[in-house]
Image (cartoon, rainbow, N blue to C red; front, side):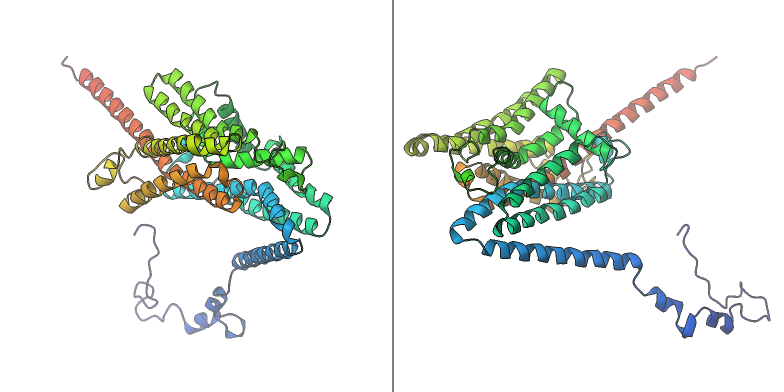
Length: 456
């Protein structure tokens, strides 16, 4: 309506005087054709160079995927049957953590895209600077990770199957070293400000000696969902340090890096301990009892993890008759408590009442995700995935790597689904505070005006 293009007929009386000829002649129309009589409109229908370039990139990507799958399959088929499963489990252990981190980066890019489409100022919520990464840059990083990690895994399989054991053992070592160097690289490349912000947030999570910011406990909550990733990272680095890569010695369950290691439950529980200390620090700063109830929620994960680990350190009869019922009870309490907290506190749905008030005007209703089915979906899926995540901590699933990988991927998906509504709730709170402040300011202005309107 405003600023649009107005279409005027060619023989409009406003474009020519009375008795004059038509402004656009047939000769001028013929001059608008290209060489050989080809209209310029036909040339405009040709694909643009950018589109052709993107098409080539997509074709190269699928060729790369096919090549990696073909080389990996041929490499695995070259191995003997008695070593194939053991070797695949070892290869999966080294690359499983980075594949899951890659999936998390893709999900986070989707979060930022939805925030941008919903006009949620996430940079203000997380207190980011002007150089923060957008969803496009996050997806660019995820694309490179998607290419590099499977390529390294393919090289590992190929070199080992062709007898180059030492070269194969160097592949995961080089990959982990490169990731560590990129994270701590002190020069202004590879998004230095964003890397510094992430590392500083991790430092604040591990050592909560200061007031807890929103980004601190938000990232800490994500780390609790990736505790299995850190456990596999610990086992992978342990084998690299003890030079057990591409060997069968690592499969000994009671070895220093075996599946019965005490370090596994310790690493699993660390993200929950960090989050617990954050809640205690927040209670010290605010004196709000809700922080203690939140700390209690994270403390319920501790018995789940350590009771599960006892399966490898007690007699089978003791595990079945005593410890397993305790583990089931603690898992049930942790899942229900965490689900309740997600709904009532993190998302502020107040036990589903917000769903049934969509037809009524409300300050925090329908600002971002106003469809009823969205909230029904997220509540139901969150309950199911909360239970499956607790089940994954069961000790007997450690060697079933495909099941653990699937459940961990679903947990990462649940967490970044959780992020949509957690950020929505925080954005609504910030807007409500701003509205209250604006009302206070307007009220003070009215008082001043009333004082100035006195009789002389």
